[in-house]
Image 1 (cartoon, rainbow, N blue to C red):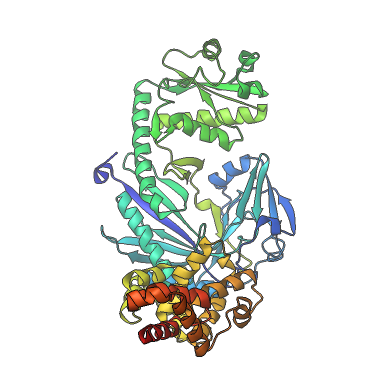
Image 2: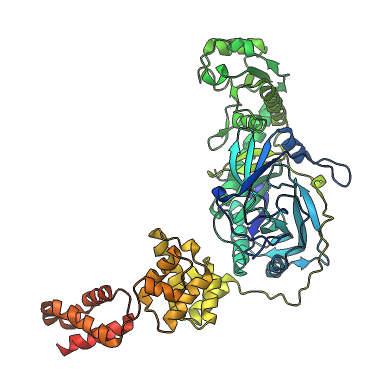
Length: 616
């Protein structure tokens, strides 16, 4: 659906969360590498509850989260420590992470604070063992450019990453401590974005600036985007956890559609004097039901939604209805979802049971009925949550935090957090920023030009390297005098081919790759041997590059041995050489390289092959 976003009063802003590629975590000396759950050495459990702020207030979002009684299990590793477990006070703020954040602030023309203070932000969803996240304001008042005008940078914070959610269980959640504490920069824009397209462009621009430092982690889950959206008659909604830039414009557009539909529904409900009745126990109606879900439940609670008939099933986003919104709230209280009369009879519920249900709650023709079937305590809490959400549907669009779905839609998570969730961290001293040694790195767009104009890479390869995850390794290779084209081709083509062949290239460090490229530059390894040697090193990380050459059977051969191989190939293809002359070169070159198996440099082979063909 196409809208006039200016007429609707669309206002949007972004929060970008990017992990930094530092040696250690933000408040301890543990490494920032991720681990597999099966590598954990032990586990422990916790229950978390919200605490009051310095002003004695409780944050509404944290309070709602705490109403869901869940046990949190944490997996500890030999690479994590007592600080992640909240059994030891945090250390000082990591200097490498802080300096990288200052670099990013320079790139976005931000004003750096005079003194950086660590704060505690209440989080009781289990993702932090302490019940709060440590967060530090570093800079404010920056700006980036987009085609549709500038977008202000409101604030830039340095935070600790949360624990990784591994498994959702019926009674709780399992988290891994390997991710907890990785330095994370959070960048919040001003609400200057006016179209879905501009939202995506702003996110892409910020992402490019972050990668320009060469000091951010790459890969799935290392960057997340949150999007704040509202329209003039609607409300501010925060959508969290956007993994892909490709989804941002769809997410904003779908949220606009959702708010428009909710406003239309609210107008219809007010015109019909809609009201929400008190929930009631209707378990007896379903004693002999054939519905598997209801039959297996301890209790069934229902609520009459006066004036809602036909509206609960109305679509407000692709494949999501008002009933889906009500169901999201029921799920937050432990239920599997809801049934409602806009979709019944169905799912084993008969027509006669629907009639009995409507009679039991005094529903008239213009009313809808929603019901929850579950354990008594869960069903009762869930139906109250459904009733509360239905009441807000009469008012319009509720302010809330929502989770981004992969299809560009969103789901309810919790109320919007307030200022009551922040209070000072007394265990970590403040830091005075020192900007004297902070350099502003080249932008990726500038690197593309430099790689092309100064290093001789073609435009496509230059862009691949500049925007790729191996850009820092390429810069290091050039500094060491390695041929730029050889380095770029290895990092962007050879490694990709090896990955497709199921070689574990993730085990190859930048230093390992550079050591192989240095051997090529020194003439100790032919370019054609780079792939086989890297394969050996990926399979056997303890080997040196020289040992990998031996293991791959690629110890160099002298010039005369190469000539002997070339002559043998020519003699096997004597007829072709006589008929085609130098036209046979390409085919014979491939056969020679195959026979030498990367033991000789291609230029030497080419030179000798042309020479021997010429003799005939």
